Amino acid sequence: MAERKVALLIPVYNDQEGLEETLAHLPGEIPLDVVVVDDGSQPPITLPQLPPPHRAFLLRLDGNRGITGALNEGLRFVLERGYPYVARLDAGDVALPGRFAKQLRFLEEHPEYALVGGQARFVDPTGRETHRERFPTEDGEIRRVMHARNPFLHPAVTLRTEALRAVGLYSERYPAAEDYELFFRLAKRFKVANLDEPVVEVLLNPEGISGKGRRRQLLTRLRILLENFDPGLKESWLGLLKNGALFFTPTPLVGWLKRRLPGRRGWL
Image (cartoon, rainbow, N blue to C red; front, top):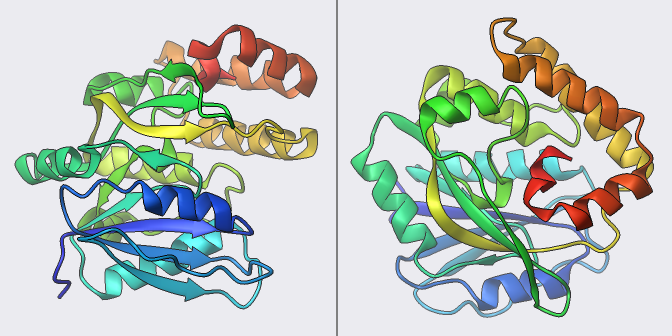
């Protein structure tokens, strides 16, 4: 059985600098076991000294398997060691003070919930805040919204591992949207929520998703929406229309819209 309640899972590929930034700013309100999965980086990732009271474990993959494979390798490590909760964070992003204690407290006080996320603020490479992102907070609203878009920010969530044992790990069948599909499975079996405050600072990638990668992501989203389609929900129709339209929208125009409509990034 794990000695600590929360494992923090961070997959990383060729981003030593981002990982070091993330680990240097880990809040210390509760002890974390940080599980870093090096997804075949060249040169290999090295672990810096963690601030107390945290400790780290480094898992190295033989080659680059992609984020889904790296996440599942990390989750198997977490499940085998009996941690009750697993939090997510990406290299380069910063967990805000109080995040892990608040999410742990929420899940401890609400055993019927499998997942809790939170709000986010976004920064550019200079550290300047560009905008904040709002996600629905209540279970009922989240269940409706997720038929139109992903109502969670992946690096902002903490999950109950018993729920993962019940529904399974990330599926390789949903490239670039593996988190969205997993959240759907969890929401069908358990309650889910977001905290009503920022829990993570996300570093914006100035390159964004390439045209090819974005089309693959949109196709995967459409597949998820179709598999979970509910004709009685207006959000199901809206999700199909939005993602279908985005599939035919040039990537430069999508980038322009994101810059002009920062509060609607989750819809683009």
